[in-house]
Amino acid sequence: MRISLLGRNKLGLVDGSCKKEDFPKAVGNHWERVNAIVLSWIMSSVAKGLLGGIMYATNTQAVWEELYERFNKIDGSRTFNIHKEIVTLTQETTFVSNYFSKLKDLWEEFEALVPALSCNFEKS
Image (cartoon, rainbow, N blue to C red; front, side, top):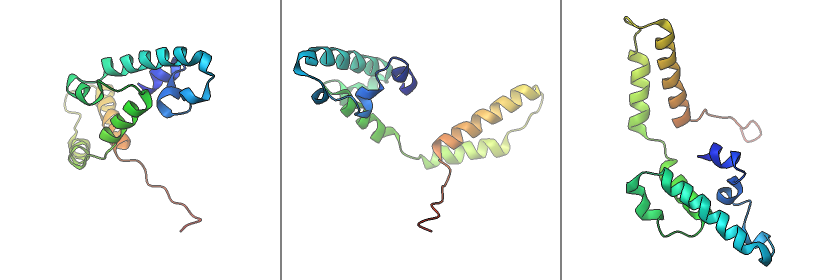
């Protein structure tokens, strides 16, 4: 979703860098229209069960932050299961390319769920 918004030059509506207050009142209606379009994109992209919490929202940034807060959590059981799949994955009779692709996909999902630890040497 983020890539799609960036490609359409609408990411500023969700990350807060393009606020209605930053524009003259003369283009306020245009900002509202673009905000409504982005809201409709988000609402058509999320699962039906999530619509209840965002259906009556009028601010794209608020919806984006709500979804971010809801889904930007490390799921310990999913992390464990992915790690277990990585450890137990075997090639068996599949092609090497298929085995490698599956393993690479699992590692990418694992890295997305568990961000790499960083060390701040100034504070250490």
